[in-house]
Amino acid sequence: MAPSTSSTVTLDINGEKHTLTVDHRTTLLDVLRERLDLTGTKKGCDQGQCGACTVLVDGRRTVSCLHLAVAAEEREITTVEGVAGGGRLHPVQQAFLDLDGFQCGYCTPGQICSALAVIEEHAAGWPSAVTDDIRPEAGPPPLTPEEIRERMSGNLCRCGAYPSIVEAVARAAAQARTGTEEAAV
Amino acid sequence: MREFDYRRADDVPGAVALLGADPDARYLGGGTNLVDLMKTGVERPARLVDVRRLPLDRIEPTDDGGLRIGATVTNSDLAAHPEVRRRYPALAQAVLAGASGQLRNMATVGGNLLQRTRCGYFADVSRPCNKRVPGSGCPAVTGEHRNHAVLGASEHCVAVHPSDMGVALTAFDAVVSYETADGPGQLPLDGLYLPVGDTPHRETALPAGALVTGVTLPPAPVAARSRYRKVRERASYAFAIGSVAAALDVSNGIVCEARLAFGAVASRPWRARAAERVLTGAPADEEYFAAAADAELAAARPLPDNGYKVTLMRNLVVAVLSELAEEAAR
Image (cartoon, rainbow over all chains, first blue to last red; front, side):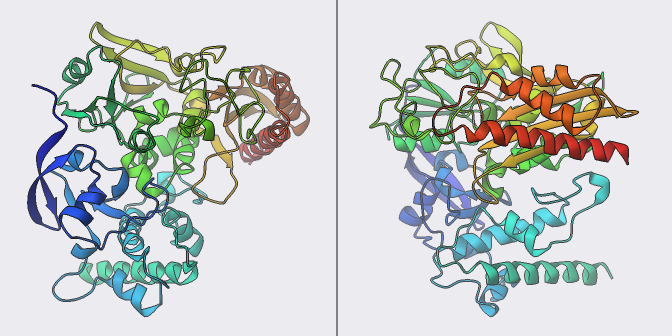
């Protein structure tokens, strides 16, 4: 096969398939924004340091600025545009709105995608760097503000809306837990 | 960014064949370091061989009671794995102390070990750097070197290896497996990284074109009581300025076995064998912990602005070993 600097790929974004030819240098972030007009995902540092470009790839939060689009083929990608469903905001989005989890809003799509994953990671029992006892027998630690701050540290907010971001994540996580318990009953 | 060819490998031999002997080709794992370096022009590959989907994503017990960790296991999955948390807790802690949740989901074990230094001169293509352009000089020696190496460096390069994971793996005698066109091979992690000397651009002992396929942890009962402590300039999401992975087995107040490795002080994760020798058979108290740290740090050669690291590491060793000894006495 002769070397080629571009490929035709099919990307699965928010449940919709998009087939397009991409220069191999193109990041998933630039495909979302520049080719597919999904501008909810934001470009901050473009170096994997700020988290503004966070999306979910196969359910896992990922910085789309360091993810080559060509390598995202056959993955299920969820952007902030795909978070709400059935005409209703996702509880994480609603919590950010209700509790003012932002000022300018630029980092918010990344914060929301990250928060969705944090809640799932915690529910799956993943420890964090501030978890005292990481033995599996100890079970998941309570999702304290300290735990939320550590788990969300990959998302910078230049406005410094952190206190209300932490509150929003805590509320959404509590709602998710209650929902699970109700579903179990 | 230079244009490049992209190929996705389906299996290990296929990946090795796709890379071939091309010095301009690179394996792509999670991309968290390589893609970043390509954007800044530090790396300019003509071909990427994507190995992220190779079937190397399992963590399995070995027959002798150790663990085999595939090269494409993500940092997240490694840190969340019950057996890692139970048997090698310092490894899980080290991984959790690195990067962010997003980056840990993307980054792989193989890529972590082969990631490049975060020295600012290495990252800036407008500046000399012996690691990037052999023979061009090292501005860090007389310039910005606050966070640079105090052990094992040379006048040609004082950059540090940024991995947290590697520090714990080194303490637990990890062995790296790789594949080449001529067949598989293994290297102890402690022997993976080459001495800096006057060839800082030659970083590992891996044969050309080798693909890291996994890391094996031998059984280490001592590791069940282990801990990773990282000091950085902010509370989260920053590289270490100094770190310690330690494990301690104490019986009747005497150290039966100790494991100690340092991070962010050398061009590789630094196994502190001189300290371990002092600790073995010594009373488990602060006096001996400090003596052990001093034995290791006697070889330190700090620069004008990073002498603090010697004190920092001494304090870290004493603090972490004291905590482990206290835990053992409970």
